[in-house]
Length: 240
Image (cartoon, rainbow, N blue to C red; front, side):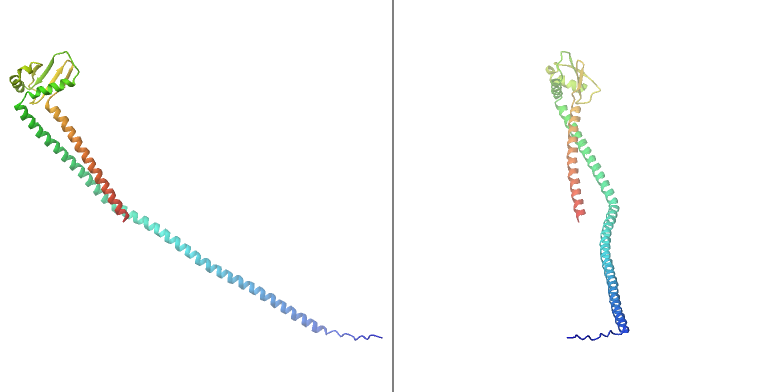
């Protein structure tokens, strides 16, 4: 059996060319669309990133500016406070010095007053009982190194006369010598090469020195308390 073949008729070449052109056009359009979309995505991404960067940068700059402003404001405030506090500190230092001088003058007046009263009391007591000077001689000799030399006791002439009248037996224990240079209540002892002041005035001066030192210590304690109170008050003001 013979197989029959039907001849194939190819489409015209113009149709193939036209179809190819249409495919090329579609492919070109697709490529153009892709390129356009890519470019649009780049632009959108850039715009979004730029906007976000602006916002982030603005916020960071704002925070940095606030911190810097606070620091500068604090420094300026402290500088202004220190400038305003200088006159106050100077006034306070002057008041402290004035208070210290005033207290020192008060202490001196107190010591001088006590010494004056004590001298008057001693003078009155010795006027009644001048023999008490011999007790001072005994106390002074007890504190001195023992000696075999003759002991000379120098006294005011008037007091020496009264001592010889009131207690001649006791006065014979030493060599009593009148010395017009000595005031009432004054007494000097010479034992060999040693010579000391055994009078009332020397003892009173030593006593007044102790009183003055004691008053100075008390005043120093008061100043420390006042200084501590001032420091605490300053801390409270600084905290406020």
